[in-house]
Amino acid sequence: MPDIFFKCGSCGKHLVVDDAGAGQIINCPDCNADLAVPENVFIRECLLCKTSVQFSDDMKGEIISCPFCQKRFSLSGGEPVNLAG
Image (tube, rainbow, N blue to C red; front, side, top):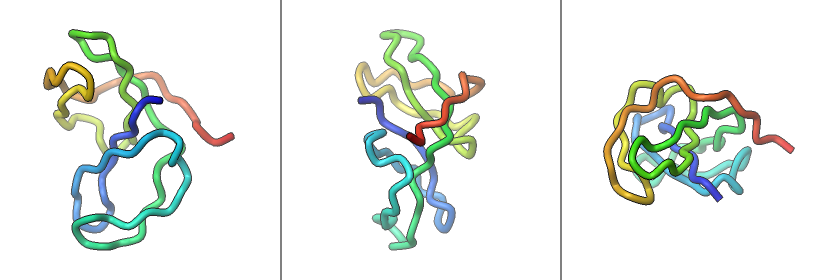
């Protein structure tokens, strides 16, 4: 399953969880704030390996490393998806 990239709303730390966690409440590993894992995400493909990456709206414009090939790319645009079931 693809990972979801998102930010902690309290401290801004970049977080990554498996998409099975969409909608669950977790604690930020840095500041311990309660966070809801996003259910509304965008999908973008890595430019090199074509791996799909899911990310929240607040991650648009951020640079990440592809979880598969490690190529760094910007999270911009993308197709909107709702993971709620």
